[in-house]
Length: 246
Image (tube, rainbow, N blue to C red; front, side, top):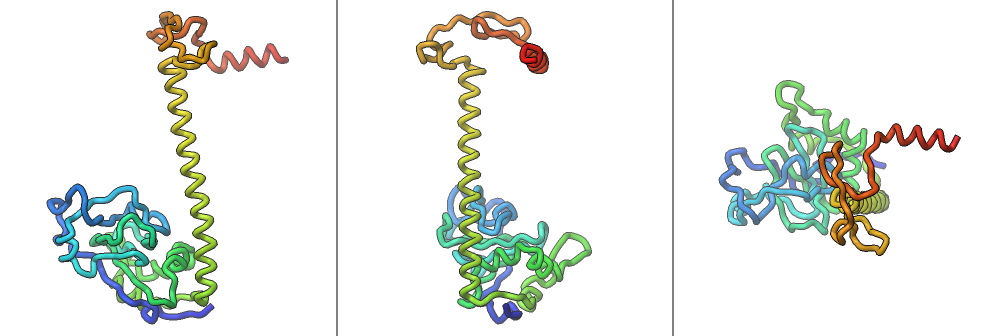
């Protein structure tokens, strides 16, 4: 590893626009996405939701436009947020907010590697070393102090290997989370069909209630339930099973 000042690795760095440069009136239904803190909660840009401005407005904001491969960092508010814009992002450019700055490194520093590095305890301590402890949480002279940070980094080949390995692990975790979300939605849908609409499969494999299955009024639930069903307290049922077994 070698220790080097970030200014020797930075190709371009820029603060976000002034607050008065983007107003609520500028937001439109579709256009150039404007980043906020919710988009920087992961090492990679989170693209769940955006506000949008027109291409003309985005063009007027100059270097506040971030592109794929850029690093975006929060300098005010929720400090410690560092995310990179992946090369397969939904959009080819974004506008950073007034609470962010963006960095584009030269070929000697891999942005994916850097985003993981700055999420580590070591990276966070470096980034927050120039935190302003008075008033609203902020990084004092954000871009100036950032450029002067001395960071220990691996050589380019090791950077690529680390970035690739960690990205593969995160992609697997993301895929597993998506599978779990799909299974949860399926379980909720099945529960609704079976125990709310009472359209569980009857003896012929048809939906019970929709196929004319007999329903009876239940005074406890104040609604109709399938014939033969009854309402009981789960703990009472467990105790009954325990006694029958043992």
